[in-house]
Length: 345
Ligand code: NDP
Image (tube, rainbow, N blue to C red):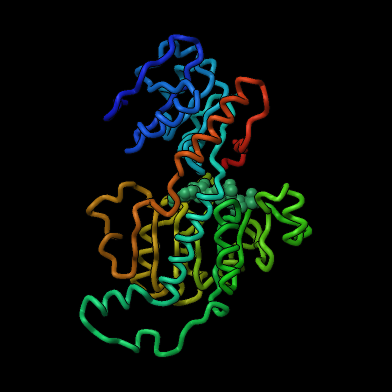
């Protein structure tokens, strides 16, 4: 990995170096924020004693770089997802993985999801086409609005992102259900839930029925006019939006994916769109990123694309969380936002 742009500053020759491993465009900004927070980050080429590295911060670690750090105790993901670290199965045994849990990121995601739902519900792409053709077309919605209460939104994944999105949609009057891995019983009221979680993240959203597991997947999908994927990518969820699941959707439904591209069988989605069973798809993430110019998804008339921007990581908030975990590691305190490696998220 090479360092781009600005100077990396000096690194202490001390034993406490923290690896910073990433090739993002704004990587120097991360470096500078960590240094300002007194976290002794170093790029791979600056590490003086790999055996002494206990904490590694990054995105898309390679097996090669991880194998160089026998003393590694924890890995910090620079985003909410950890599939880039856990997925390839390269995390050494005994190494904890922590991730970002940021209300601002959740708000960013919820706003994008809300936009995508409205874009589909209100046929905004058709109005865009009409405008491009200078066509005043009041027949697009047939003067019969599809009102929020009639739109059944199904959110796959009811964690930090899914719940924030559900809350915003419920507040706007949409008919929202969710799908998760574990059952919430008994469903607490919002007040009870907030109490139980110290007023922070809640495990449920009032008014949202949560379907659970493969047994209830079909029932959940069959009641979803708009399916929104906010799942983590794990062996259980990879390819989950396949031809069979798309076939369970009501005719004329919409598919929104802001989780990971590999949740969706892209060929099956194109087929469902071409056949008209699925009326539109709004995709932020793709099996291959950047999406190659030759991909059929780019030019499909029923697909709207954004380039993995639905909820970018907020650098100051993420640096504060990752730095707090660094201080905890150094002080022997339990880490925050630890990932369940067995579950994969
Ligand atoms: P969380 O870990 O908070 O929530 C994950 C949710 O998915 C939980 O509700 C969990 O169920 C559910 N789930 C996991 N496995 C299964 C399964 N096998 N079957 C059914 N449900 C399952 O994750 P976040 O909400 O923070 O993030 C979700 C994903 O969103 C991230 O992993 C990342 O890939 C993606 N993301 C994308 C971004 C972008 O810019 N495009 C930005 C941020 C995140 P349960 O509640 O029972 O545990």
